[in-house]
Image (tube, rainbow, N blue to C red; front, side, top):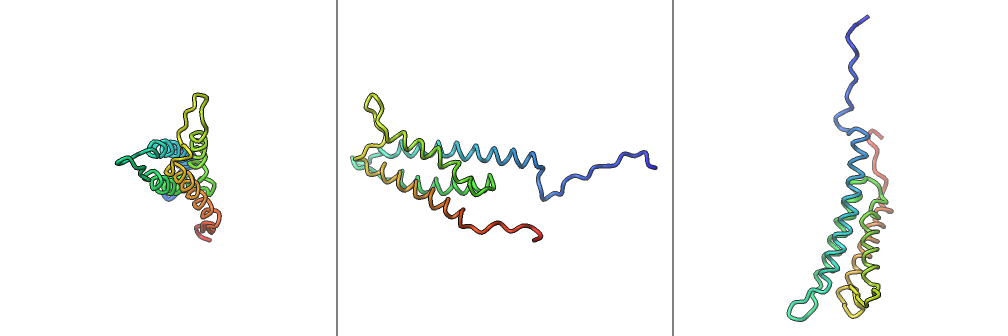
Amino acid sequence: MSVVPEEIAPPPPGRPRPMLDLALRVAGGLVAVVGGVLTAVLELLLATLRVGGHLVGVSVLLAVVANVALSWFAHEAVGRRWAVALPALPWFVLMAVAAVRTAEGDLLVAGDNWVGLAMIVAGAMTFAVMGFRQVLAPPPARPGG
């Protein structure tokens, strides 16, 4: 009989602790949601950008690039296929709110602004394609299997 207490073996170095893993996934999901809000606001601000009196379509390019990056980040951070919805939902909500006229008559994305309309279509299609790719992706390989 030994008087020395048994030591509890730490988890293997390749796997994080379950609570730490959950906390990191939740934090990654929150970052994805905040990123969706911030990029939507930035894209709406740039939708009316003019150079020499002509609209510049920089927000369309930003919508595609940012939405691809946010979708990839959400999937990698959360580790679930449905995570692409985390940045997409606030982005869609802000675009819908921007397209509705207020009681005072203000409108963020007007029907005669081709950049704003193209930005909404391009951003929505980007999230749709990224979500569809996640649905069609093969299931991840299990270690040792």
